Length: 334
Ligand SMILES: *[C@@H]1O[C@H](CO)[C@@H](O)[C@H](O)[C@H]1NC(C)=O
Ligand SMILES: *[C@@H]1O[C@H](CO)[C@@H](O)[C@H](O)[C@H]1NC(C)=O
Ligand SMILES: *[C@@H]1O[C@H](CO)[C@@H](O)[C@H](O)[C@H]1NC(C)=O
Ligand SMILES: *[C@@H]1O[C@H](CO)[C@@H](O)[C@H](O)[C@H]1NC(C)=O
Ligand SMILES: *[C@@H]1O[C@H](CO)[C@@H](O)[C@H](O)[C@H]1NC(C)=O
Image (cartoon, rainbow, N blue to C red; front, top):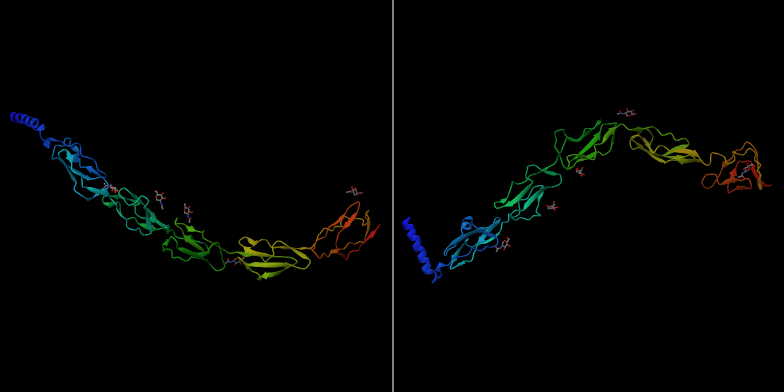
């Protein structure tokens, strides 16, 4: 203790003696900060920096040394220039993902997170959904994108799919249906395994579709074949002369019968006679009209097969351009 005390006093004496004379005595201030580097924890603990002190730097987190010594020395009150150069760690391109890729929007440098995106129809099979660039490279294992598998295709009564029951059906695979003899396939014969592990469009149906022989009075079949009529069969009709077709001439056998319903052939012209209201054919108008019963008239209109305008008013008779045959009708001036 005594020795120590003496030494301390001696030191203090010595310092006091040299202070006025030489720079050997000078201390350094806190060591400077540099970009991308930091002081080691040991150096950070130093509070005094006498001449000859050596502090150590290291690359900041996420940086890697490229060149230069890591130390700086205090000499005559100044720190020697730090030569250490550090650059940001880059993990480089990650290995390619089979049937997938990474979203590299955050780049490839330290801290960047890359998210795995499996291609359409593929899903992640292990739990790796992302990776991060760390000092030791990309974190996590390689992701695995696995093809989507569909369940067994729907069964269809009176029909069957072209796959074995134990075949795995994957995304994009097509299943084809056929119906048993005597049954018609309604819908799409092919369905596809989608990325949602479902089939699109819905599976078809197999039905025994038949349509009755259409009855079109006063008409003739002019297109399509003879009965029996099965699914998708079509027939076309034409009306006999003097008859007018109502509806569509061509009809198709659909699941619920003919579509549209079979046409009808209607007698051309007005069925209600324009003269039916006449009890007496003598009209009080500028013309005299005489009728001789029974009234039998048939219209022979070169245009539409319809009664042309025929109006009778109390004051005057208007009989426009109508050719009326087989009709005992005479028009004369009163
Ligand atoms: C610090 O790091 C950045 C990014 O890597 C780099 O651009 C820069 O040059 C570095 N600075 C020094 C002084 O090394
Ligand atoms: C990648 O990620 C960024 C940001 O997280 C996002 O905006 C972008 O849409 C993503 N790109 C793809 C292809 O998913
Ligand atoms: C289909 O229906 C028709 C008429 O209803 C019938 O004659 C025929 O036997 C049916 N076919 C089958 C395979 O059931
Ligand atoms: C798959 O599912 C998504 C979301 O439910 C839906 O938007 C998409 O249309 C589906 N795709 C098919 C092919 O069904
Ligand atoms: C036509 O004559 C009848 C009988 O005279 C009469 O009742 C009717 O009101 C008249 N109609 C018109 C539109 O003048």
